[in-house]
Amino acid sequence: MEPRVSRNAMIVGILLVFFGMLSLLQNVGVLSFLSALVWAVAFGAGGAVFLYFFLKNDANWWASIPAGALLGIAMTIGAEKLLPWLPDGFTGAIFLGMLGLGFLAIVLMNRSRWWALIPGGALLSVAATAAFSEVLPDQAVGGVLFLGLAATFGILALLRATPGMRWMFIPAAVLGAMGVLLMTSAAHLAGILWPLVLIGIGIALLFGNRHREIYR
Image 1: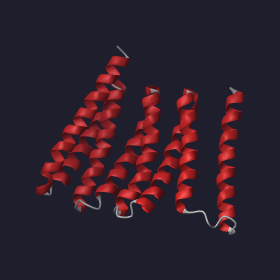
Image 2 (image 1 turned 45 degrees about the vertical axis):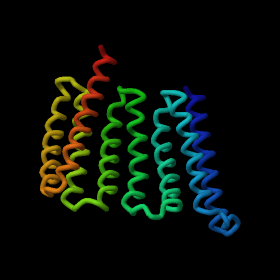
Image 3 (image 1 turned 30 degrees about the vertical axis):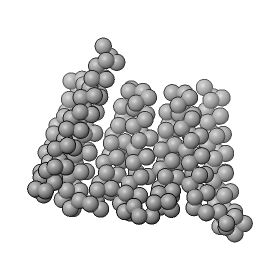
Image 4 (image 1 turned 60 degrees about the horizontal axis):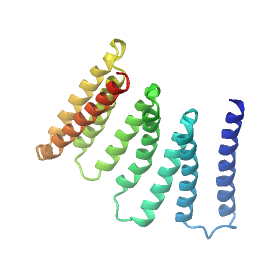
């Protein structure tokens, strides 16, 4: 166990030194020619390294978090430079969404780490709120946040379907009701609301069915 920990610490240290040196050389003018896209590639490469170690060994579950963060930074920089027409809300949601996916990957890799669903679902909910803030009214944007949090608690309750964890259905129901009320306050959003509800129910059923198959 100790050699593995030392190896992981060495990899993180090398990456930190690499990014620190690049930043220092650029700030003092030695590498001032580096463009934002070069930084995107550098962050993407760092994220790929962490992703590799995450997929290689379950003991490296923590590597999924910096992998999501670094890949999110790379994608955000790339979107700002290559897709300048995207609304600010969408580009801002990329980093939060990738970081959230980093947490969700931990759960998908090992269901015993169910706790990672909470920050993952919260981050994805905030990311969806930022993305929809450019196209939906303020009340509806709040509905997106509440529905996302409701889905997080609902899926978590299905994953941890034991008598001691059923209380999670209560905040899921309350948050879901608040989200529906906020979304339906704008009548013209009915065509968006019901597809989202169907998608949420479908995802919950899929997670619940998968959970039953694993522990059958």
